[in-house]
Amino acid sequence: MASFRILTHPEHGTRAVKIGWSWPAFFFGLFWALYKRMWLLAASLFGFIVLSSVFIPPTMNGQLISNILFLGLNLTISLKGNQWYASLLETQGYQEQAQVSARNPDDALAVHANSQKASAADIRDHEQGAHSQDQDPWGDQRDEREIERERKDGRGDRDDDDNGDGGSGGKGGGSTSGTFIG
Image (cartoon, rainbow, N blue to C red; front, side, top):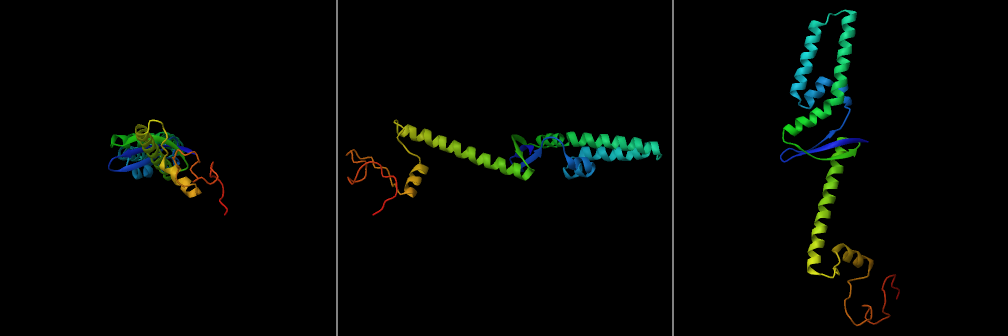
């Protein structure tokens, strides 16, 4: 799995940028830069291509030198391209929110969205818990999920009467867990 930076912008949404090596940048350097709208990098690559074709002679040695230069350039772009792209996004107002591990950028965005929902639910539950603790200093308050789970299990609402019969209406007392047959 790869690691991704999650960058968000208030108007343009969220983007995932891979950390590390970029195969598309290696194979399609100039076109990759154009696709990512990295205009300065694309212009630099285009200028390098033009200058190398003008100044490097079309001989066997010239071709070898040209190939070595382009290989070095592609390696550099592949190693640094994603970092440059993230920096470009940050200059456009994006802010790094997190780093996640995923297979691809779409999965990284999904993982981040799920973690955001989970943390929002945790914050909401914590705030509700603090609020209910303020209402009930003994901590005897149950959350809605527990009550709903008891209703689905057939246990019903908790009976808080003080007659000592366990809340079962005087018919056997004690716990009412299990299956009712009768």
